[in-house]
Amino acid sequence: MLRSMYAGISGMKGFQTKLDVIGNNIANVNTSGFKKGRATFQDMMSQTMSGAQAPAGGRGGVNPIQVGLGSQVGTIDNIHTQGFLQTTSNPLDLAIEGDGMFAVTTPDGTAYTRSGNFYLDNNGDLVNADGYFVQNSAGEKINIPDNAQSINIQKDGTVNFIDNDGTKSAGQIAIAMFSNPAGLDKIGSNLFLTTNNAGYNGLTTAETGGAGSIASGTLEMSNVDLAEEFTEMITAQRGFQANTRIITTSDEILQELVNLKR
Image (cartoon, rainbow, N blue to C red; front, side):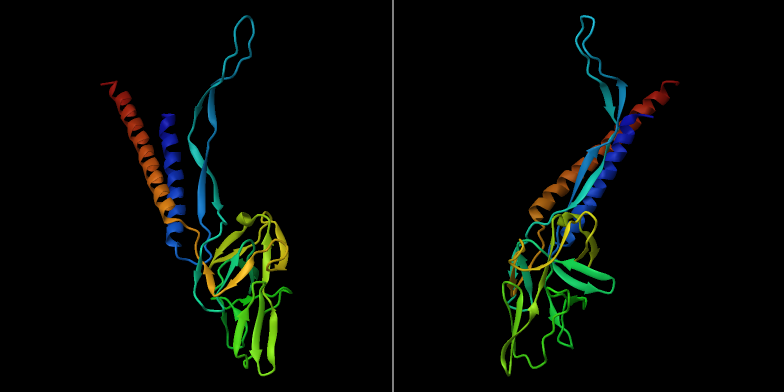
């Protein structure tokens, strides 16, 4: 069989994966705290028809002769660039301007998120949309008493409230730091889990240890750029189409070979 046919198949598979990544990005264009994906490719092994030869015997050197056998998906990266901030005027909507992630307590352990649409539950605990407790700098939950009259969250993550005795603090929201946030594992619901390659550096607070500041009354939106995604979609579509033409042409050549006997 022709090598070009299998190369075309590998190209189709790769561009299908790229379209899957682009489709997921576009589907989450309005998801708060979402970080877009990016598919990259690598060439597969090449078949060596003749090796390289060094200059010798009055002749110059000869380069190797190789035929590539197609492409494969190299990586699917998570791009952790800053998304734009959308003003909501809700004091419990929080966004991180800079590096770091919010830490929340789940039944399976600690997870991390850039989506800061938080709420107060019936007990006055600060939770995310799934009811997971937002952690303070000590890894504990943050509680606001029932008699609190107003809530204010500072840039450093300090949660203040006013009751009958005046202004009090309910703790400081934690910021988790990672040296390689692209190494985090997506688990859905805007949550990430740490991995062996994420470079977890522990919990800190906003505006310390390289962590960004917290903007109350805003939400960080998705960092997906629709214009870029549509451009990549066209490129992937044309690449997929070109690889189908390779298979079609290879099939026509095989048909000609079969017809030689007639």
